[in-house]
Image 1 (cartoon, helix red, strand yellow):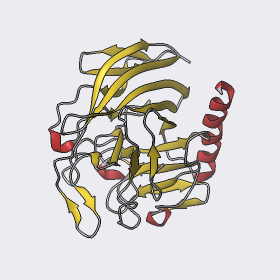
Image 2: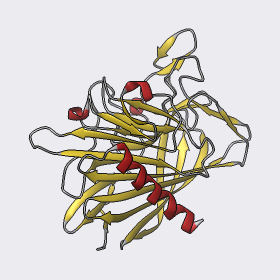
Image 3: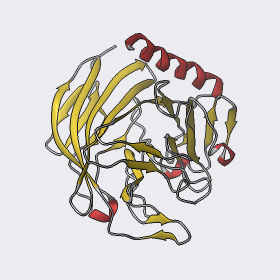
Length: 303
């Protein structure tokens, strides 16, 4: 397989292959505080050039392609927008934190391109609550698909325990979003969710699975693409509950804090790792299972 080239442009790293952009990793966003500024991948493309992400949709302007986003970090919000408050609903509070890029330890192009980054998690009030070491990888799987990997190591930088949860842990039923969140194109609305249990729709939200996928159709061209997200077996909630939607909009999120908050002690490090397969064509659930197994085997080889 040929190389993936990384090009640092000062505010983003562009990942490209064979002269075509695959993803922009924007590490210095210009978002306002209300949107909880944080690095994100957008646009995200298949090898064939189809865009499979959505940036700042009007219904949820804090959705940014693919981003590591957490709505409940103690009393802080690193997701964006209002915070769900028990018995009150969503309330806009002065608690929209920011993930601040500190620097890159390495940027390596190649057949298995790799980005190693450090970040600070800073509350709207200016407190440093987590330091993060983040590793991003990219490799070509075959003629139709490529793999994006994401690993985070978040260390509690305070002298108190910090619970990480979701709107569900704070009282909203079946709204356990938080984690590595993908928002798909508007044309994917009404698409098909894939899982080890088969193919379906909104009824899959909240179910546990080691992987999930989303098959959607593009506007303007007669083309279908698939996103497949794979949870690492070493992750804290494996297999996680999934926040997945298709009727209102297309999204996938393996949500490690969907229904149970996890306390991160002072000095403790939370580690999570995921794979995201970006594929031209419409995978079936059976085909997706095979791809997910291949991604999991790659992790096993490097354990």
